[in-house]
Amino acid sequence: MDIHNIFLAIPNSATIPSSIKSHTWKNNLYYPLVRMGHNVVLLDYEYDEFFVHAENHGWLKKHSVEFSDILWRTFKKEHSKSPFDLCFFYICDGFVDYDVLKRIQKCGVPIINYSCNNIHQFHLVQRISRVVDCNIYAELHAGPKFAAIGANAVQMQMGASPDVYRPIETAYLYEASFIGQRYADRGELMSSLISAGIDAHAFGPRWRNDVERVGNVSIGDRMDKLLSIIRMHGIGYAVSYILSKYQKALGDKKEDEVLADHVGGILADDAMVRLFSESKINLGFATVYAGGREGGGELYHLRLRDFEVPMCGGFYLTRYTEELEDYFRIGKEIECYRDATELLDKCHYYLSHESEREKIRKAGLARSLACHTWNRRFSDLFSCSTISSLLRN
Image (cartoon, rainbow, N blue to C red; front, side):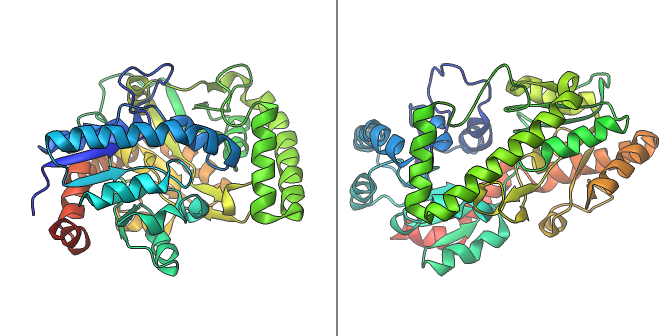
């Protein structure tokens, strides 16, 4: 069965966003589907903040009412005009009333829900995964998590659209750069590079202390999250969480002095794409904490940047994960490090070996254009037996 009409709900989807600089999921999910020829109805509702408060039960209970109402009214209105073949959502537990999802399913429209970061944040989608018809996950090793709870799931690795992520003709401005949030060991690694004489710069949330604060910044939101953690994990876990946050804050203060002149705020999409070409080395940091919190064991997984940087023709140096070898030839199309020492050594090496660096970045671009576009990802997804059977029923 061909897919003609798709109802899509993704973060940053409001027609007129208030302050969002980056439209990541429009660029990576919406536009590729449209360019493939699908008729896509995009939910006109900005819910990016829901992910910031994904563990705040009180906040979600209050705000999910409006989200649920808009989701259902939009579906019902558009479905009556031209019936949907499929709903493609990107939502977590508690974002919407599950009765709304069941009403959509009763209309004969299957719902697939996309999620990433399941290696360390699977707890954010455990309930909704059992409600939807199929789950789409990015990380290979997240598959057993869905299987363990009896949830239907299919892997679709992330990619990049060459219409958005493309090489820019420009001079190099930075020896090394990183774009993304500051968490886990990112501040430590960046400050160690700068201290060793590498002109490295970082851009994104939490790098600067004066602007663009994100997360649970109000006392009320912090208390809401703490109570949610206590309900889920107990007081002992909550105390450990608070201590680890405090220790991390102390470490961040020491790093701030080194980072001061090497950090910037959140970049707009076009500035981000340009920076990939302005940097001799584009850095990737793969470390996350089990459970999504400081103090958990270190885990590693792929992310969007692993595909966006090579698609822009940037030289990419990221933390090694076994799954990367399924998508790139390490040392030929991208480069990897396994610890802080190797990261520094490879930065020094490739800054002084331009021809090797150029050869690798060009090969990474060629591989990305051939294998890692979203068109290719969606074509494979929609032709797989699991999704095909949902559409036939």
